[in-house]
Length: 143
Image (cartoon, rainbow, N blue to C red; front, side, top):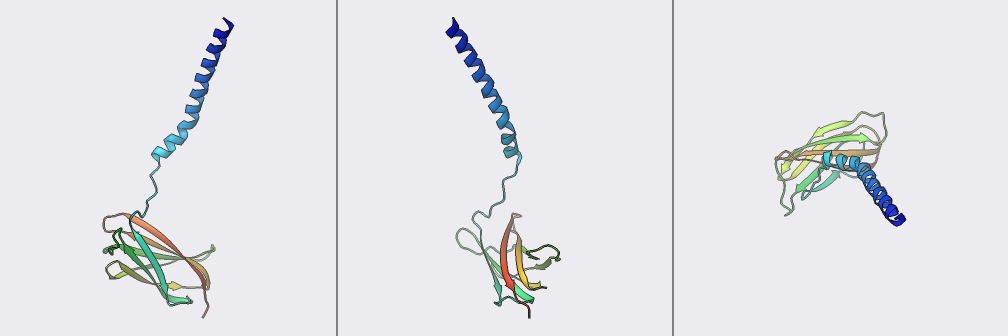
């Protein structure tokens, strides 16, 4: 009889523990299910560049080349470029890129101060998908 009571108590304790685990895991499951997965570039390759080098204060040309999984150019995208100093307190600079060849986008970006910059490419593909790419520009030189 004592063994039967012990088994019954163990079973009840096990069921309570399982219920507690399920309740504890519920917020993680709900949060994951409600969160939109991050946009990935998937089969989109982005190759960014800047010229001339070394980068100096003034207008420089930032470029990106967009290709698909079969290495074909992705034409018809809208590319906005944003330049930010890597420290707070400076206003960002913006430029719209022009497609000068299928899949090749170029923008004149005004570097207003020497130092380290972060250039963000905000890309909207012709089908509405959005992709972003960051390029670090270290050591913009004073003239």
